[in-house]
Image (cartoon, rainbow, N blue to C red; front, side):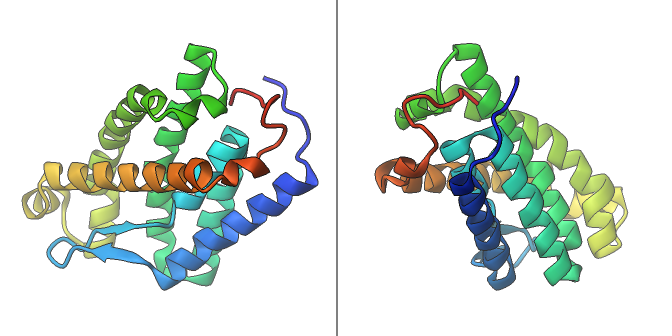
Length: 196
């Protein structure tokens, strides 16, 4: 699909959303499980705001810049930034594919029922990716546990539950901000938008 060049307004909003993502990571607003150390936070909310406003390309740019800035400003969080990106990308990709399959525009998401099917599929894909990556990559690096030790210490369903809650929070909060608080008026050509 051919994309039009980024407009000044879109570039400005992308920059602001990427900065917001960075700030929320550095302050780290959210809840950390005292038992497993996993976070539920609002770092990726701005990534989904970008998706609802401008589409997949902007969500990718905001998430990539946000993850890079987090890594630069807080080097100890490079692993978390990478994992956040890896966990979140399947969700906005699933939402994009859902629009393509339904031949719908992003404004269709003003009806939350349109979110359900692509969101469920995205969550399943997210969990299928993030559970083994946690056991064989992230947890061993972060805690020095072996994969088998990690599986014993943190059951797979706990990782899945945290990712499900995180997805619902990210998408739900972004949806409320864009559609209930009318941030959607800043989307490019709302009546003539590209579908993804």
